Length: 186
Image (cartoon, rainbow, N blue to C red; front, side, top):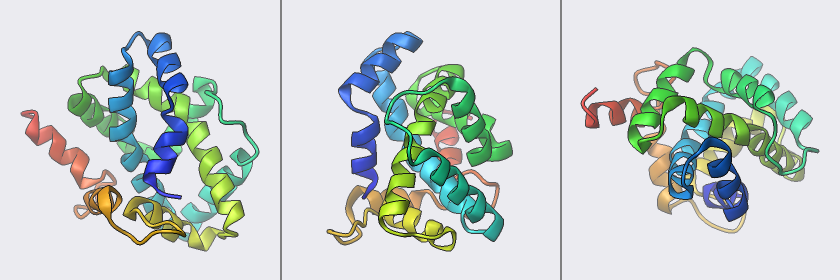
């Protein structure tokens, strides 16, 4: 599993169109949000999984969602998931994604809250099929961000995104998202 396959599972034409209709956006804007947000979501989960308590919490969440269908879920569950993934940095991440995509922050939040349960379901199924325990989740997510899968070597867009998702300043937000703010005059 790699970033492209996750995006393909979540950002299929029907899902993108449904989200666009639900939130009053054209499909290109929805796709833009999903493409920009997926590395941020995975990077934040990887950072959370780098501690024992974070890895255990993520493993439980993935296990709880692994049996879920790949359907858009209610915003309440998704909002809770986003809160756990980004913690106190959620507003900053949403603001930076909004600036980089040209989509209002509340709409970015709604799109991400809609797909968050789907993302946990996909990752949960991957975790189960690979028999990855809680301690191995950070590595599994790193492989996804790095573009590695069982049938390919690390490289391509995934490794560029994986490098960009580093949090060198330790503020909990991937450095690329903070950098996007400076591009847009923040």
